[in-house]
Amino acid sequence: MTALRLAFLGTPDFAVPCLAALAEAGHEIACVYSQPPRPAGRGHKLRPSPVQRLAEERGWPVRTPLSLRDGQEQADFAALDLDAAIVVAYGLILPKAILEAPRLGCINVHASLLPRWRGAAPIQRAILAGDRETGVTIMQMDEGLDTGPMLLSRSLAITERDTGASLHDRLAELGAAALVEGLAELAAGRLQPQPQPEDGVTYAEKLRREEAQLDWSRPAEALARQVRAFTPWPGAWFDVDGERIKVLEAAAVDGQGVPGQVLDDRLTVACGEGALRLTRLQRPGRAPMDADALLRGFAIAPGTQLS
Image (cartoon, rainbow, N blue to C red; front, top):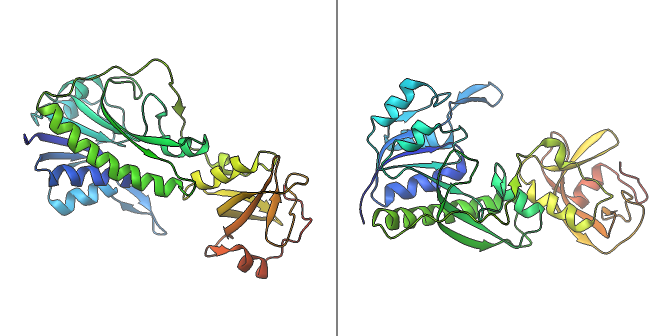
């Protein structure tokens, strides 16, 4: 395998397996770029990103610019004399000067089977839509939003138990393996970039907190997917007796009634179609608990109408 001189641009946990896999494959990590440390925790202390923490542990140079549009930043990037730049959930727009600086360009790991689910939240949108399959696409970046030509893709099935968290972790590992494979093939000249199909384009908009409210007029199957997709963030929820209750696990079951009506003492709630049984929940400031434990300390009687 040809060892390449790389820069890595990434920020969250999803990008960490890719960075680790590149080093394990023998590539040279010339520099790591990540978004600047953000205030976090009760003390609002600056906390470096997961990618920055790994880079510092391994002793790789780290840069955390607010933007890559500055001329000096672009000159410093070009001076790295890269074979390629690997971009995984970095979170900043790459200007043309950055895209064109590496010999092989900028290579992106995207968590969907492009052109489906271009954009910010492909993992959660795939679950919400009821997709049975997703995957990762290794692509060469251009100036569009996930529009560049594809180098390689790998798929996996979405199970009925997958949450946003579990699918995130599986795709992160799949993406790392596909990236190493794709880079080796690209360096050897065995991969030809393929334009994305014009048909089948969908966009995965950024998640919004207000989307996570459960609307009982919708089908139970859709709400069950909503619960899974929004675990762990922002967490599906409903209000009752002045409290906002997060729903961590739920299942669509048979049942009928006025949407939002609690049907039994097991927290089964009528929906527009079918019913949703709430099995694991969390009250504000409390630990997650099973439905029976919650009901012992916070009564939600059959017949209660949830908003």
